[in-house]
Length: 359
Image (cartoon, rainbow, N blue to C red; front, side, top):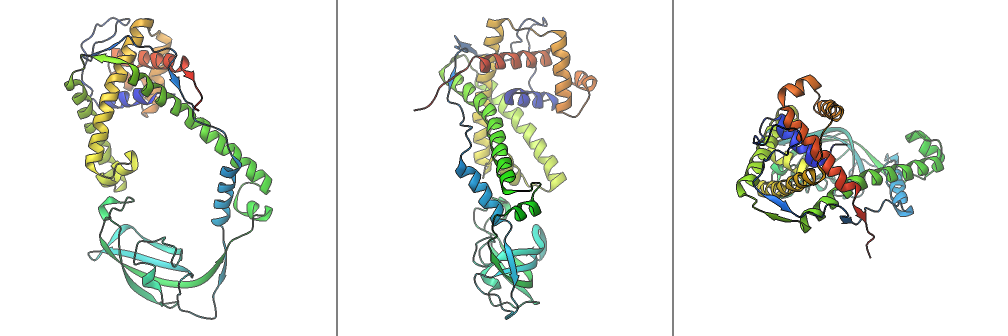
């Protein structure tokens, strides 16, 4: 598995925006790309507290409860036709801003429980009193901030809503029949076993990346660095910002994402200021991580065999949906060799890390 730092570095190389190095052309030498250095790195025996992969009965039950809640039983209301608080209504709707329908603001056959808070303020209350078979216009205001789409924060929208039917909703009972009708499993016991296995796999997968992140962060924190030039950090920051700006443009043209949506979904940043700060902090960490890896490569005299280079080249090519020949033509061999050296150095650090239990 390619490490996160290596992945980002290769992404920048593929984008053609990583600053060129000026090191020796000999494979066994370490190209000097940065002005600083890591001093006496204690890269073996780095302690870390592991992620807990135990699956509890409470976690399994939460998934079971969610499954049951997502498959309620409905009974159509036939003795009245007016929408009331607590009713579940089946509706078609289209949302408009400034007279234009907006993306993500329309649906057909949607179920909504009035008073549940499932829609933005004003939408549900605006349907109270409406009658089955009629279409009503409802004004509703997006929260500010609105994290699902920051561009809509605080804006007022008008929704044209058709009431298809009113239904009473009851919670279903967990039975073999419910499981068989809605999953690939025949019994409750089988489905419960699947959930436990699925949760354990998810936790174990996350635990691996958690270990790598925690080990590297702990190593960076306890390592002394000297001579790091601000321009090296700024260079990585600018390269990263350029790369992600290009990626954001692709998502805008392909999926209609605005830049604010892009940074929210990919980085969890609710503002450009927060995004910019995240990139600057990441740039400093990446420079320090790279200096540590240079130190390890030097101390361990890490080299790359022809077989290792060929394997990595094929893996990188697959990662970027290209061929090994095309990748080799786009990126200098010395840079790819350095990435493989860094991978090996990073793996050596992780293999020698020491797991410690918290109190």
